[in-house]
Image 1 (cartoon, helix red, strand yellow):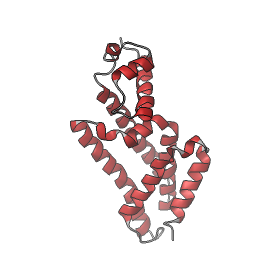
Image 2 (image 1 turned 135 degrees about the horizontal axis):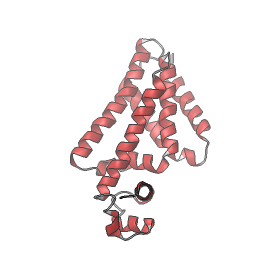
Image 3 (image 1 turned 30 degrees about the vertical axis):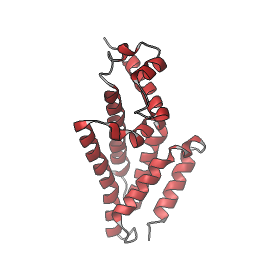
Amino acid sequence: MISASRKAHIRNSAQKLFQEKGYAATSMRDLAKEVGVEAPSLYNHFSSKNELLKEICFDIASQFFTSFKTATENQNTYSEKLSAAIKAHLLIVYGNIDASTVFFEEWSFLEGADLAKFKKLRIFYQQQFKTLVEKGIEAKEFKNIDVNLTAFTILSTLNATRELFKKNSFEKVTEHCIKILLNGIKH
């Protein structure tokens, strides 16, 4: 029986190493050393380094989708929905710095069908933000602005907050992002 805690420990160590060294520069031997086991024993838990990357990326993607849906479904205005979506996104980043860094920077190392599926998920997630902006424009809550550029700017800003969380509180970063991003598009 494979211990769930051992598997989680391996994954957490992989996230840390992938975040610090990068996926390509991290070997299974590096991971084994970090975990404190022989390299072959890692394969009892994960079939490959790419399986680890896949699990990290798809888990964070799932968290983003779930938190977006939960955050936006009970909001009344599109400003409130976008504000809630921003906060939800930042909460995932804040709570998963190593994993979110891997998600944002190392996903391109996924292979084959996993890479294709992941790209579709990224596009679909961006579309959720585009839809909020489009509907906000239609409702006259937001200026008539380029929807694609706006959604890209919002997500790029949110994804870059990882470094800010090292020196600032979640509340400060979130309040600032919401204020700057929403004020820039509201009427």
